[in-house]
Image: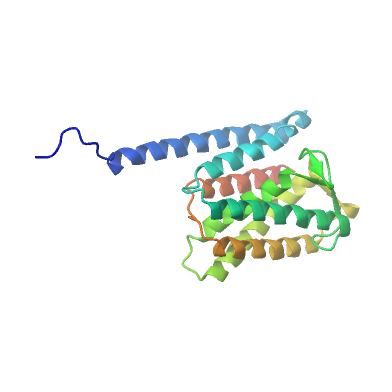
Length: 227
């Protein structure tokens, strides 16, 4: 006869709704912040008020995204640190030489800077590399082909972001022209990071990642349509 005091794990049917609730709550929070920002930047007479919340929005997005990483192993932490560091120092080289993306300088919108580059830029590179890498995992392709697709997804988001970034002084380009070199540089750096993503051994699954990418894409694309 089975021991009536023995504890059994909760059935999957009761665990799944809890996971779905967490996901819906996170999606709702991100949607609320992005809709508020979209309305404020697109229609407010004082968009500067909303721009001060850009760093908070980015940190909140990344924090919720990483909270849905199933296992935050040492390999995953290593991936995050290396990706953030590579993204940051590539930008340092880029702003100082113009060799990677073209000639540009960062404005004050993204907050605290070191070596002329906002520290949040490192977080942004991590977020984009991670979310697009997760998205590419849905495709039945060889690893390098997935890396190429993920890099293209990063470039596509950057193409939507660039006009908005210039408009709200995230950064400024020399002669106010976004060079094609920027997109070539983005693809090259993104591809390197995606290969690193594929070769680092951690659980590559995140229920929030597709929502984060689409929300970012629609946010910047929508602001671009508003002119």
